[in-house]
Image: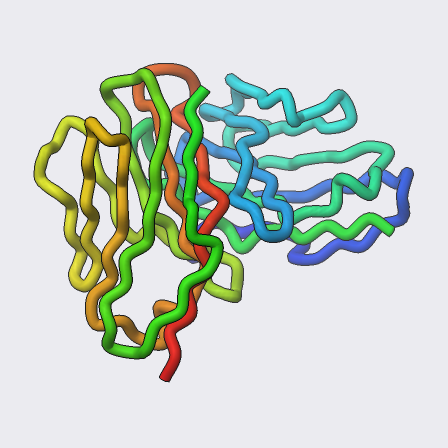
Length: 113
Length: 116
């Protein structure tokens, strides 16, 4: 296993378009997190899955954002009707249990033009 | 809500020197974890060191050590014998292990540059 994998690495989209990102966690990890990181800032929590259940969502996650983790394996994060303010790095992390180390992917950098 | 503050946006030291990065946090919880993460220019976040709040002994990992002052809510990172590969953004992070998702709450980061 090569760690947490995120695709695509970069995405440029026009305002108003929909985009979808994918995260493949480390295979035995049952916890999966999405964070958003804007330039010069620390990551901010967006949402969390334990297996296939989405257990917590941040107020940052507007109704244009939706995340899924079917079958408790990979996860997708979709942004509908993108806005320029959505431009950021979207990071995925996974961990084995509630206090284990979180392993991060390299992120997907989204640019909305 | 918990908050994490890193008051040093940037730091720069010479190779082989020792550098200390500061972090303070605010919480009403008694049981939690604190972390330092490193984010090199390639952007993948890597765990540097972890401290459990119930442990009085400061965590150490090779050249990296922390000074954990629970009463003062302070958690600084010391890097000894700094190396060029230590150049990165460093983020202090808090995790409440009792409630909710056990998500990480990050500070704003400190950009550390090690000069040859």
